[in-house]
Image (tube, rainbow, N blue to C red):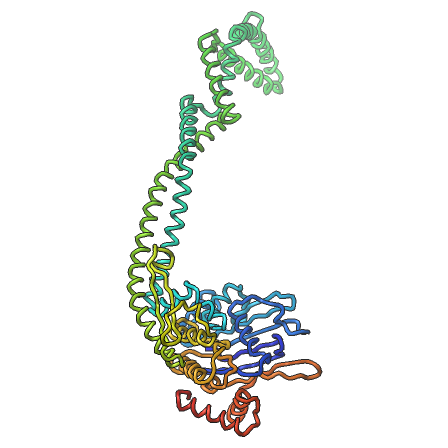
Amino acid sequence: MLSELVVDGIGVIDRAELHLTPGSSALTGETGAGKTLLVAALGLLRGARADRALVRQGAPRARVEARFVVPASHAAAAHAVDADLAELDGGDVELILAREVAADGRSKARINGRLVTLAVLEQIGSALIDIAGQSEHHSMASAAAQRDALDTFAGAAAIELAGAVRGAVAEASRLGAELETLRASDRDREREIDVLRFEIAEIEAVAPRAGESEELKELAARLEHAEEISSSLTEVAEFLRGESGVGELLAGAIARLDRAAGRDPRLAPLLERLTSADIELRDVADELGRITVAADPSSLATARERSSELARLRRKYGPTDEDVLGYLERSRERLAALDRSAETAESLQERVDAANTEAMTAAEELSALRTTAARELSSRVERLLDDLALSGARFEVGLVPCELYTGGNEKVAFSVAANPGESPRPIAKVASGGELSRIALALRLLTHVGSATTVVFDEGDAGVGGEAARAVGRSLADLGQRRGVQALVVTHLPQVAAFADHQYRVTKNVTDDRTASAVERVQGEERVAELSRMLAGMPDSSRAREHAQELLEVAARDGRG
């Protein structure tokens, strides 16, 4: 329930504070006094677009703040807890929604003192406040609005099934589009698979190893110069071991140094080093003796052929053996992914079939509920229209079978004959604005089962007068008194205002050449005076006051209070 509303700097409203109570409340006042601005302020808390034209001239910003108290089970409380904006402690949950609009049009939103995004404000604000304006009468003419109204009237099961149908059909459509895209690319996929398989086979046939090209390059160089290398080895061996070679000379040097070291200990380390050199020299000579390099034309041809194969792969797949092997690995992975895509297509088809089956099953169950609810809604609307001074009006809820779509297996069409003897026509073609207002009101009264506990009716009684106005007032009062909904009614009709549990007057005053509106609750004689003004424009007229008092008494007798 909305318990407090504070509005600063919106249009002609400098500052207004409303302390609201359960039941129905009427907002009255002269045209242009600012009643609709209060509705616009509540719209801002529902996430409506921030319009800098709302900011009062000369004010730096417009601000609206509202305090709600709702049960812990309320949808808005759940959203606030999920967003870490409130905590549940077993009792009621307090939610304070605030919105500021700067003179340049930029806005900020807060819930319980914390900045929130517009999406979060809209989610929570829409769960708290519902606004029914005159534009709703025209929106009720849309097929989607009529379908939603019927499902709402049919109850929670129908609403759940409608959501299931909508979700399943949308999922089937999404998966179907994905499957078509996949199938459309099958030809390209097969071409790519053929290329990948060829390239993989080509590389695998050669079977390169990392670093193999360098090894073959060294081998080919050795085989090409085998004779030169062999000759060099022979010469080196002769230098090391031959007569007067390095080995013989080194042995003589060691013998002479050994004799000298026997007489001079300082030479011992040098002798040791020279001896080590001799051992190393002998090892080198032995190892050279084991190396053989023979000319092998066949091996050289094989190495050159293998090098050529590797070079061909490197030209196509990468500058090094490692790059070729990397390309091979990536190609194998891509081929495996493309092979899996065939399985994906099969899996997608199964998911499309499953989604379609789910949609059809839910749609059939929904159709059964809609068929029953359509008859009941038709009857209930006709009875309510009789109460709203449209005696004899006929209302029909038509179900037109069609192919399965997001709305189910049928189109929903509302038709009405406002007067006896007329044939029902689509609701959009009802001629009288007053009749349309009452039909829209009847539908709202019967289909309002949403979470919003505060419903604002913005001059929903347009085009209504006389006995019909009393009927509208009685119905709105019933919404607040018997259905647990807090109804806030903006009206120019005294018959409607008289049925409200509480009445607030919006007045416009001029001070120092500035216009400002104020809102105050009127009770007792003040309420009688306000109703007198609404009746005859003469709040001080005794006859008008008598008529106003009579209206209040009739309202009390017929259901208010």
